[in-house]
Length: 342
Image 1 (tube, rainbow, N blue to C red):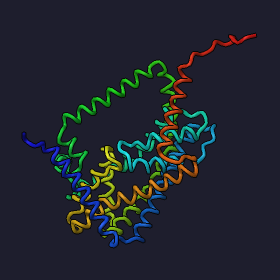
Image 2 (spheres, helix red, strand yellow; image 1 turned 60 degrees about the vertical axis):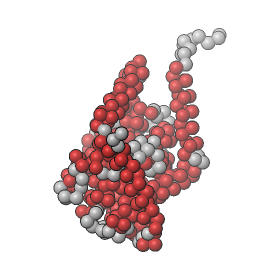
Image 3 (cartoon, one colour; image 1 turned 90 degrees about the vertical axis):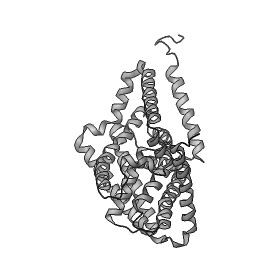
């Protein structure tokens, strides 16, 4: 039987990832710990400012409710930390539950819609960053994605029919979900529109969301500059924009925690001519491990101190119980007005 080239690339990608992880742990003494600490501090500031933009979106959606920033920040940080250890952005489920439990009279459709408001800034900056990255001569072109040793990206690039199947299945699942909501579709879309309230006021959106996210992005830019210095790659405008370009591609394929396989494969390719192979390999995994450990730790502290949960598993269980209780309440027969005993 002829070996499947896609399977071979996936196996190689997994092997390369663990080899790079080993390189990182064997070179711990060479890390510039001061630069690493500054990088993580800037990254934490980035997440905090970004959570403020999300808070402004929610405040516009619920102007008459008390929206506590501390709880929104805690939900944002906890979700980001969890997304770095579970695939397919599972942390967003945690964020939705924690935010809903923090805002009286809020609904899941409105909160889920609020998630997408942030995408406007990400798309506008992402286009600029990717154009820059693809014009530098070191960034892999889309036809070459299947040759990269990235387990998830290599698999889908090597199996376009399966990718089409997955996209079709997701579309069908979305239509099925819409059909299930069809009996209450008017109320559903009203709640979705409520979550998007701020985008209908362009001046407010630009001031309270886009500009705030841009401020956060500057701290993210600075964070990666310090991280590049910490792992001896060298901080520069070009290098940071290339890293951000890699992150943009990884965000499109969120099948591994933090886009681990995609980021590692791209960074090794992008910085192949900048530093030694061992240095690039250590950086490609090291920055992911550092950010994941930092965000997971801060997120767990937020869970314990703000929401009084002792584990991420406990949050997920509470969220499922809350959703089940809501469904039961929605499906319960309504008692006619005036039917009570006299």
